[in-house]
Image 1 (cartoon, rainbow, N blue to C red):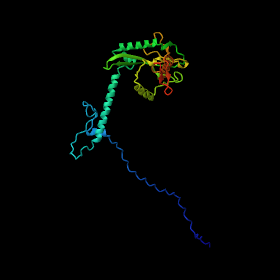
Image 2 (tube, one colour; image 1 turned 90 degrees about the vertical axis):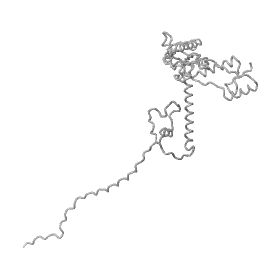
Image 3 (cartoon, rainbow, N blue to C red; image 1 turned 90 degrees about the horizontal axis):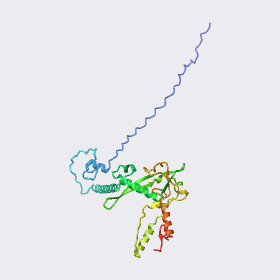
Image 4 (cartoon, helix red, strand yellow; image 1 turned 45 degrees about the vertical axis):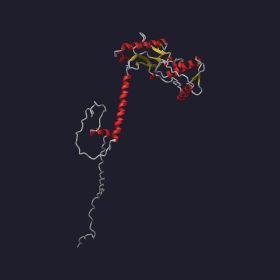
Length: 311
């Protein structure tokens, strides 16, 4: 008789569950930073004084205490407190004195500027002035003076030539009583349109040193000599433009072109105010006259001091 199958001593183990990865630990939240306080800009001392009603925007009696458009603060009556005499007033007094001095300086500068600014700035502005006939007369006199001096000649400019621009400068001269005595119009070259190495080279003009002047004055006082000062009218108009390096072409005066020759330009034979080399050329002309024709000699220490013993 067959025997029944015996159970194994070791029973079959159940299958292991699938491996699940362990999640990483959660990161700790960063500590919150304390909120930063906003930087509140404090008003300046002058603004604070205006808000408190102790300051003023202008020192003129007729002007309002507060600028137009700003509402004055409500006056709040406070209980009187014990304040020492002079406490907190020194800085305010110093600022008031400083502000008043600035206002006086600005007012004086504006008054002087208005008194001197009697001439129009442009030719178009001069034509709209009620005294235009006097300005026109001054312009014609200036042009005639330059023509007689042989300052320029009309010519056709080369294709690659640099043409220097020009403009009119007006000035009304006055006497001691602030009365206009002369209307002056001057034609000047606009030197900023010159090209270095093409329109100009040397610009140096020697000037007497202050030490030389301080030496001459005591000598004149010790020897009981007379001192004279001269002013050469239109000094820069006497400089000569000679040589190939001094070829300058300039536009005709604004508003005063030669009839039927508007396309031509001026080739300058003499210097004009505004040119870069005007001072240098005038210095050369003056030294030539003083040394060659008047018999002066240069000082060895200061080249701008000329000496002679013929007078």
